[in-house]
Image (cartoon, rainbow, N blue to C red):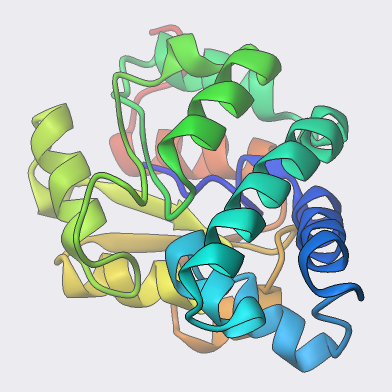
Length: 217
């Protein structure tokens, strides 16, 4: 089971550019520009992050949502999957592993990215930030994903790049796999995931070793 941004897709630049373009359109200047503030905003879904940028005024929030969606439609087209992703999904599928996604990303942007990257077919069930009340680090998205996949929590692995992913997986009673190539590798490792990998090849090798079943067998 996977996180999306920073785990499956290298979308950091697209997201940052979209926030800054939307802020420029609505507020007249790009935001956020402070690196620490940016890192915190990247952990949030839009419903939580947008008010931090434009405040609670309904008109400004509506304008920002529209501007962000337009900006992401442009910048997101350049976001690509991390190296080895397709090969890993093919190998995991050949092993009979059920795959899913639990992300804080909005449903519309999740579906667009999955179609654009050509990876939607590999995932039997997905949970977006619009599908749950409480997003990560709450366990609700991962619990919903496990239920949708029909996988017992103790038999699942949740793969993510940030501390919220690891916290949520553990709160759901699931083992966590941190990735070193995502947005927040140091913070991710600090939450003590059971496993940590630096590539998708390492991830597939890990799953094989845990299952005791070589790919394609």
